[in-house]
Length: 365
Image (cartoon, rainbow, N blue to C red; front, side):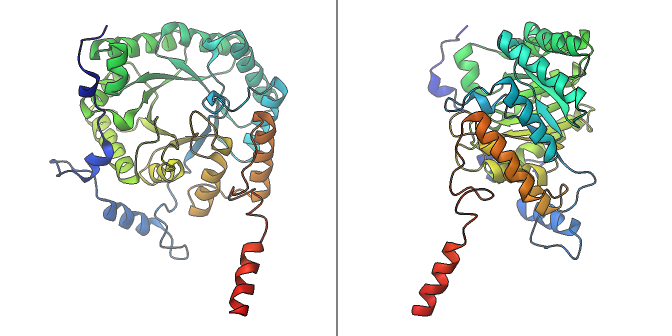
């Protein structure tokens, strides 16, 4: 129920501003220090100007194309055969996990999720299985039905809005949010499925609200927590500030080893940069979609993310031919044209005419 406040008073918290605000007692490390620590981790023969270096283990990539990606109004819903082809393409470029969709959205979504699980298991594709659900027991129970029907373990990614704007619109208070997390966690536990709490719009959520959600997730036995830049709002300093805050809070809650995911959008054109910075700040898993498709202007672009992580040493490098094959499969499945300026498979990237013209111009000059 609405509390009658003026919407203008429900302004979102801004982690970008928090990153440059006067320092509290426990300020996140400044970017200069993060870069310096990153440089120290890079082997001498590597490019010392790259801040990621080789982590103790490769960061994982979760493909959200068949969940968040197809929520874009300009993409089509792939046929079952196209979905199958796409998960094989995911495995071909080393994707670690796939979001099967939102089984509670309807009968087709449920059946599509079952189909994909059976294909992944039968083909022995090395893809961990996840599925989305609201923090509602009925949604989680639909994921559990998929797991029960297919006999495969699935991590439930339960999401709830964490920012003031959503709370004002829905009339949600802290007690409701905590109860929602507890209900979803109870349903997941009853089915024997691990769950991840997804904090929607975390990059515009105040610390106290995130602290409340983190505590509820830890107390309910969450396997991981996902920080979302739902509106593509955050800059790299904001990424560093938010992740440092999450690490401190989880440590204070006695869960320092709880793994973090990063899920970002591209509304300001910063989706890939924010994802790479989240990796530099130590998240264990990062989300993206094929060709960057998704709501509004899309998500972080998966093939560019994997290509850059390979170049930076945070994952095994993937040949561009395989990345191009993945893009082609996604383009067909989603009826999404590959833009000519795509850095890997765009017509401009494959044609050296710009360099030739430049050389000609210099010669004539």
